[in-house]
Image (cartoon, rainbow, N blue to C red; front, side):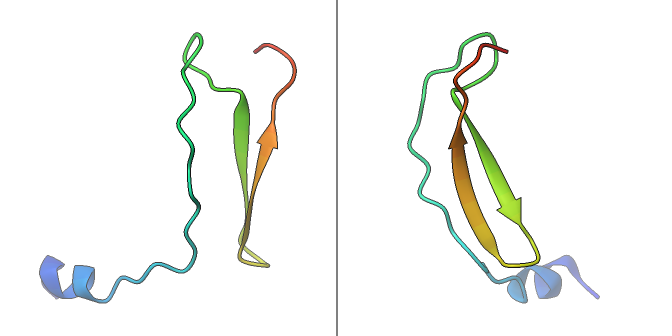
Length: 50
């Protein structure tokens, strides 16, 4: 199977609107949690420094 045929079959199951946050030491102030069983995406705030 050719790569173009494979790419044409891809579909987006869920989208998440990402609001850009500046990086600090390579990290942001949030974590994205993806639950594959329920097809849910949630964003969790980090309150401690990494």
